[in-house]
Length: 243
Ligand SMILES: Nc1ncnc2c1ncn2[C@@H]1O[C@H](COP(=O)(O)OP(=O)(O)OP(=O)(O)O)[C@@H](O)[C@H]1O
Ligand SMILES: [Mg+2]
Image (cartoon, rainbow, N blue to C red; front, side, top):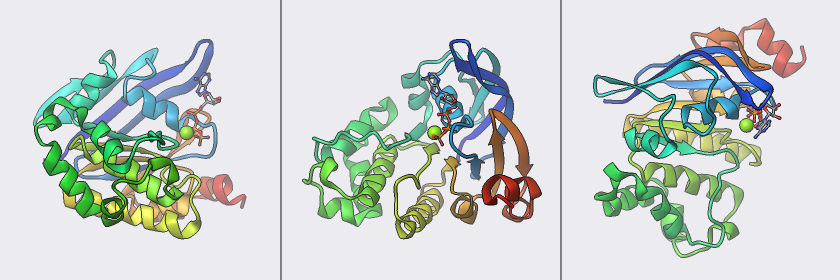
């Protein structure tokens, strides 16, 4: 069974700067939800709030897992990851001077996943044959697309139930963006994950998203209950396509 996430009335920022204003959104079990927005609108800040890296000044974030609801606000990042939240951070944040295998092993620290490290590593290599071929290569010498696969693989090493992915397309050539997005869909289906994905690349994100939210200046300005609804929205046309 996958996990679900509910965010309600979230305010957050940095010092005196308020970035998120009364943000509410939900990701139901087994869904892929896109958080759409261009630069600086608060996507990463929202992801960081879910992970306990930014402390909201108001609101709640609850994770539903196996019939239990956990309030994440106030929990440490380590405890949140322990509950089963995996993360592919913005900019991937790999260890460039460690090998592919070493980077993957760094992802396996979650308590519940520690005993399954060998099995999870085997899953990763099965999901990403390229990582298996390159297991001794230094992460920093991999191509952009390979590094994104490694960041996804590392997140899987925690055997997560919910995956937060912050801008998987960033810095990748169009063909690789497309492949990465398809890979996320494939992983989600085979591991029965629930996915919240922040993206600027609207067209690519809605290829695999069940639904999405548009965040503008830290507020959810539009909620689309299907990819079609997002596609046909005037605000999105203005926001993304300058129409
Ligand atoms: N550590 C920080 N200290 C102060 N301000 C910050 C910090 N991190 C982000 N901000 C500000 O918060 C706002 C939202 O940033 P955030 O990184 O959440 O946007 P984003 O939607 O993820 O953008 P991008 O698509 O460029 O990654 C921006 O104005 C940014 O300058
Ligand atoms: Mg960001």
